[in-house]
Length: 247
Image 1: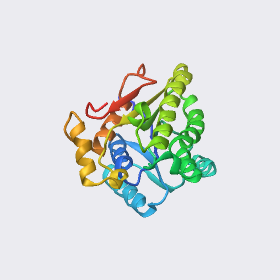
Image 2: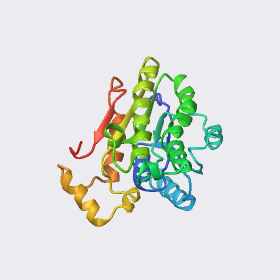
Image 3: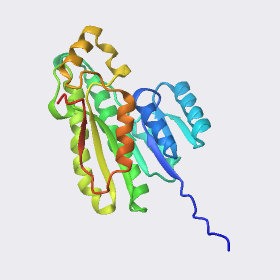
Image 4: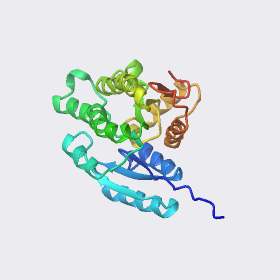
């Protein structure tokens, strides 16, 4: 008697800001988990396509590289027209601004908010209906410790990430009855291009403040994302610090 084959259910994930740094490491770990991937970036289309091709070749998953501004609702609308199914949403796209608030332009403030906070709203409002009919799904927002405590010279960035943290907690309460988990990872100092604005001396001073005595790695953020995929469904509405004991 032939054994009945259990059909393999395809899994789909969206990672925003995936061309480099934390986003590309998250994409790699999700590909290892067997997810078919939608990957976005705003500027580095060639780099994103190369990553997608590499992941497809190495892990046999389908990857769809898409150049889109996640802070533009029309771009997000067009992105989700290509996505009939979604199991995991990772909101990683983000930018920083270092400077005095009173010297910041209105356009710089709006760009920070569009990219770091508005984009999370735009993606979630599309992703939730795709998850509701399955009564399951994971939304993971990449945030910052500055969203919890604030940082001098980074008031706008702190405000945007504080909004992400509050949205995470509130949305988790809203979606818990539907079997959808919403969590955030509040990163400390991670070795990415976002920190290139700081000198070697400034980065060393930051390192000395961190109890773990080192800067975090993008791969560690990706490991945390992967762990949330396998966490109990009861874990939701959490802003999880990943900062080497810093905060």
